Image (tube, rainbow, N blue to C red; front, side, top):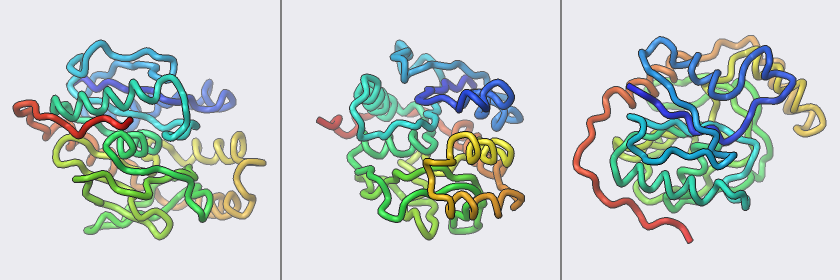
Length: 237
């Protein structure tokens, strides 16, 4: 199965040489599940020719806001609608989670409580997963038809399911302990309040459930069975 990675941001220069860029992190996370990957730098307007160019799509995180005016935002929303209508499975992580919600009629904004950073516990109903977070923005208004499948004390809509077509999560299962530690030091200082960073550092050695989440993502892709294409919601704007 070929997964197209739609890259919407880059890891910090200071971390990229040693730990890789965002597509590298996802390919490592999902390396045990037999996927092939193709990369598209959509933030540089490198889009697939068709939603059928890959068997599934994964939208990465980004430093951009889904509600900001960047050239790639509207084409990406249009691509999301096309994939939904064609029933090609899509997974969104952090920014990917947010842009899908926005494209489908939800609302994204900065959380009044500020940043969520580092190991964070998410209630998936039958179990609690600890995953790394790095965000101020979050989905504050659900799109029609989206089902909440995980939440945290500071993020009510932390993971969403759109029937069998799209799965999105706010935290970063692709971020390892070392990557989030580097992100705190190389990007966080001076940007995120020190008390939030200190709290994140205090939890750096907590166990993460990254492979559990990787298994959920892989199962979503692998269990998907394409059916006849159906129209999706009308695009925003």
